[in-house]
Length: 298
Length: 332
Image (cartoon, rainbow over all chains, first blue to last red; front, side, top):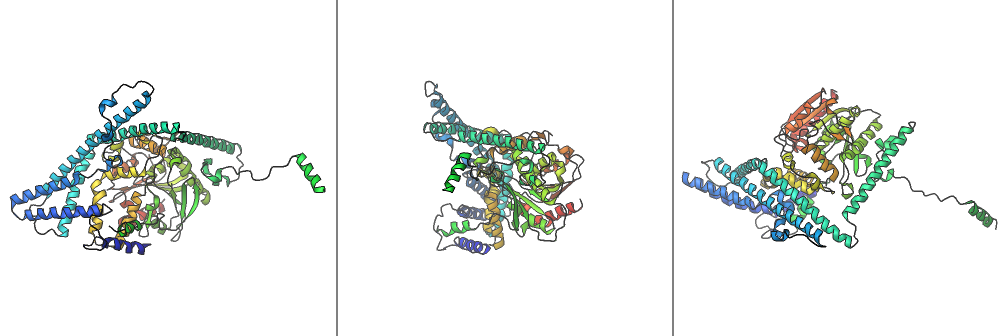
């Protein structure tokens, strides 16, 4: 396996070589492509920085400012991990607010209320996402400022690999430090909690709506399956309790008995713990036995 | 792009079962209990049961030959067992912490004790598995001879604990509902702790470095482990977040499992606490708080200048952690 892995990694890495026959333009966001593209932009911006640094104090300051602006812009569009589960804003699809305030009357009252609650949850999700995005932008702004302050005024020369790498690592350090300050803040924690709580409510209302339609079509619902699962679990617990009580009542059980199920907490999911099905034929009744004897004599 | 790139990346995977020889010795539901085959002269004595967390797969303990905590323990002559909790599915959503600790973990302990005709074994709990081990030891102190906790949170309200701050105001019951919690969602949460390093810098590092066969193989294995995240049984997950992260019950001495109080202050067995000084998931202070909870136990804490994952797989960890565990056990 290791040899295969190595060969395939080499084939994979070769695709990134300039002019490689397997490499097409615009690699479509697969795997490393975003990092390769970002690295290209980073290299160009860093080269400008280093060129500017060689042009005197004023040019160096301007170059540093340009570079920190580039970094802030570069990361501003990135979707923070906490938004990944919600797509581009559930709230954007919510009906307008006037609809959500209509009085709920008549036979559709419950459905309307549910949709209104969903709409409200979607609005809260959207609001929480905006707050988080704003905090993310604040972190990037602060990171860019810290980065500009940490740049060495004497930095100059070509954008060789070592210089680029040092700049990049410094940027990551600044970004993580700035983000950590924001992420520990009360505002961030509140927004994060609001996003999760509103998302939970939205999902709950959506699930209730879907279950309603499933019942109309006589399809099984998750609620029904949950009810059955809880009943099964309750029966398992009663069985365990009864087995344990029986074991206490018969202390002379052989020593090997606990080996199969310690603490006698067998679960129904383990086939061995289930009672064996009765496979032996039922004992024939006396009348059947008499008939069989007659047939045998014939 | 041609298909070669994706196929190469997809093929850069690793068998998710660890590298050391082991045998299945017991199973219950999705749980598997493994016993590792010795690779050195057995030191004799009490077997060691490793209790890993629910949130990732236990093969991180045995990732590859030169990065295997388990291999280090085997080389020291220890008799090692490992619990694999499996992948919970929708049918496991009502599995509780009591089920995990009093049924599955207790079942493994009883099985091992029966095999070895012993009254007590050594327990090594890792991360969340360390919390489970503490709970088990508190409930069944006579079944545990020595307790080792590794990157284990005890105080969930320390200032550096970002996860705890984030979940403090979340309505856990609504979040979990009656379902499981997606492993993918948890991964997003963990990535959010250090988004620049975890979603960008580490890949840039890989690309920027000189292509080194061992380095890439190791990277891909760790990558696989990170994102091979089982869904979490909803009931147990909800209890864990509420009881530990939100209510900090261990620290407040008011934790009950299956109706029985977990009495850490009455523990009198030897305890070794292994702490990562650069752990961003379990801050050192969150682990170190154990000392104040275990009463007059024979308590030892060892700090390593490592992060959470580094405690399992770094070269330094390979040199120091198994030796520390084996050495500590040998004197008790």
